[in-house]
Image (cartoon, rainbow, N blue to C red; front, side, top):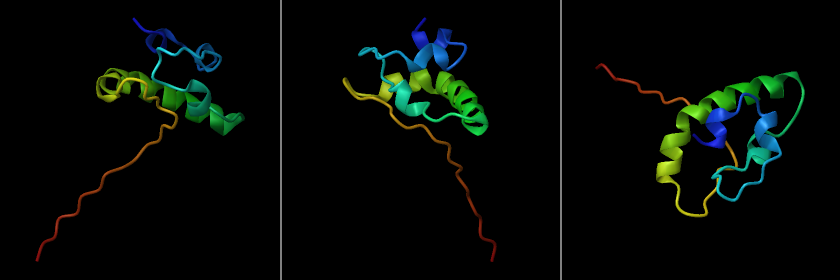
Length: 79
C-alpha cells in the first residue's frame, strides 16, 4: 500500500518530498483556514479514489500539482 492510501490527514503528506510520489502535496494542499481545511479533506478523499488511475496514465517524472473538480453537462435538444 502506498503513502497516499495510508494517510489519514493532509499533515501526513504535506511535509513529504518523495521523488517516487507523482504528487506535489505541498502545492495541492496549500492554504489554511476553515474553508481551506474543508477543501483539503475533500481533495484527499478525491485523490485517494483517483490515485490508481492517475498512476497508470502519468508518464515517468510527471507530477500532479493542481487538483480541482469539474462538472460535465449534457443538454439534449428537442425540436
